[in-house]
Image 1 (cartoon, rainbow, N blue to C red):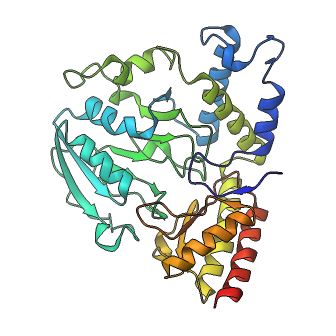
Image 2: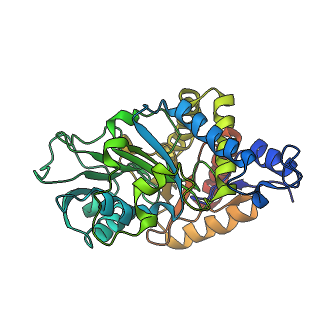
Length: 360
């Protein structure tokens, strides 16, 4: 069987040329006589891999010099604790709840201090982004937290919240490197890489240097202290070495494609194709307020649970994998990350048209 169109929300589709390049180097990485999987993270060859990955990421995002790039483990979910442990000096933080991951992050932060939920879209099943132009930002808040792209619900902040001078912290797991971003507007930007950048097991944290201090909450484990990892340049202990290597290849692929401006154009074109179909379809409908739609995750429904199940079944048989919606919301979801080709979305829309004709 050949390659299928994989619409998984994560772990997700990777660029084919990245996979081929890794396959070629699997047994012998550039004359070392071993795989990157077998290599000491202290070796010269690996030192070059991680340094190059960081340099390419800095280049792609235009990361300012006063920000550190950390390659860590524990996924985005470990950051839910790491952020308050390192940043909660006043034991207070403001959270905007736009989906399950922001909600979980807020619940975790409550173990370490006071969490103020200053806005939420839970009232309409997270189908929109609340107005964040004039929020009741808490005077003593150490930071304001958002999940910028909501993988499950398919929403995306098109404008960042007005934090009234407070540090903005953003989980960008599912929109990371899908378009340019101004890193200087954030204190911390972080994301699990398994959605749009690499294999599961690595999380990238981009953090402003003034937020990296020894003054962390009492009892914070060594491994959950940003300063430890920043001072050791992500090599305090064995990092997720192979994952970082693949991320590095994806960064090179992105640069080769023309960078993030080009990726944004490509992603907008793919998303438009799918959303335009949903907007005129007589069977399927999108679940998100149009102005808040994500370019990466597109949830849709027929309005009939049995028909949704039939669609998922038949789409899988036709070579479209992982179109079932998240277990908490049902329906369908197409994740159309950077590595999903335009042809994949074209083929999906053609299949949906056929399904619509047969089931109306």
